[in-house]
Image (cartoon, rainbow, N blue to C red; front, side, top):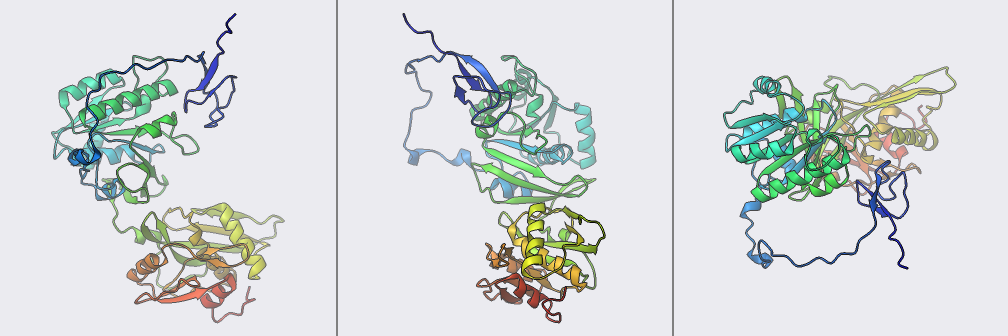
Length: 455
């Protein structure tokens, strides 16, 4: 007797298969996505007629794959020159960060060179028109459609023949060919596949807006990020005007570039030189502040770290951070206490950045250490000083990448002295570079008038 075929189970997000049902996928660790897929079948694929024959790679025409500038310089910087005909871009971000505002301005700029179709599934066309009037993004070649069906979207594409298609958002669209609610795994996968096929077949640059989950990752199946050509993350604190655009994946350009924008009542404005947003304007230095230079992609940014140390009678001192990694702040404070004899064990410590920028790079450690030490000593750092370096658990100051690029940016903005890791002090015209090998040496260089134990 032939054995009965064994049932298999498949993850709806990543395609992982198993012979036993599990509540959690063993590949992508997603919960509730493993479904019964029936018995495995062994099939032989018969040859079919090809639409275009294979050609040597040297004979392929690359003119149709060239990027077309959008007119928004910061976006073009991240994309590697602009949008590519037939390319599909996924833009994700938290609610209210400005995704729709950014794309509406891009649509109006691109409409100057050809028809653009903006399909909204979350708002009415009247609401989008009101926002476009406020932003000054009106154009006779910008077409709006409020649809939630992919079939209706294809009809609009047939009538408009756009060069750029914007779908806001992919989670609100549904396909009549599959079951499930809009935004579900099955629907998102089918809708994304249909839009990608449409873009590739007709050479339409397509932008899909995606929602994010509570932990900041893109909602929907992970397959969505694999299918598209470009994945962009739009970030920013809702209480700050600064917005950062990062390329998580880019088949047509670099993934280490960022775009800086300012969100205002009149729309989104590109910031080619955003360093001034992260500094406090003051005439005299204040204890507990230190300026550093961080690298966001290839771009150096001047940022200010602030620290406030206050004595407390509570048995458990408070540690509060804003814009900094809490784990690294605690580590730097422990190194200061143990290696540099800075007494902060019985004090509340508050650490933050200026301008709402988030600094997660290890090169910020040295600036944070000097800011905390300056607050303990109640002694300000000399004016025009920047600090760059990673602090290790042994109290050593480690080298970081791109020191010369950071120093050149600091010198351009008027800083005259820099404390950097030893062996990184190559001369930079216009700025005095001091190399240190440990936290103690950095404190002596920053506070020459104080004794080493001066906490």
